[in-house]
Length: 164
Image (cartoon, rainbow, N blue to C red; front, side, top):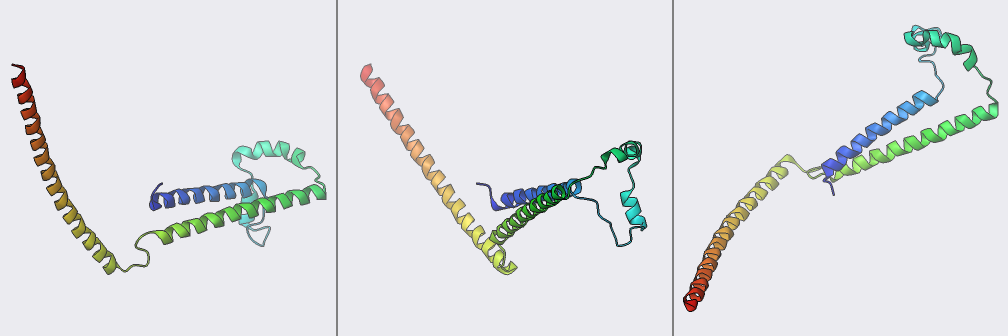
């Protein structure tokens, strides 16, 4: 299993993807709305202006895109849009809670810097003692290995002497 920081990074990446997907869905599925109260304001006019590359296309297709939509179909589309937005919002909230839980589970949260330094110092001392013990065990292993080698040589010598 991945460590907590990796899990946190993965969750943050997923949250960014969810935000992006939600904004994209809203951008493509919702009706345009005014940016401020005045419909004749410069910002509203600029926001509703066609892009330069799309001006010729929009001029020719603007009349053909206008279709009459029945009220029941429009209500159904709005209901579907609201349900999808609620679902996307719930997903974002759940992911945010998951991130909060991961952050709360990180070591050192709620611990003073002095306490953390003491823990680091204790762990450093423990590491030194373990390293010293490791050196002793390696020396013991080397002694045993030499002893085994000498036994093997004695056995091999004894076998070779009995065959001559």
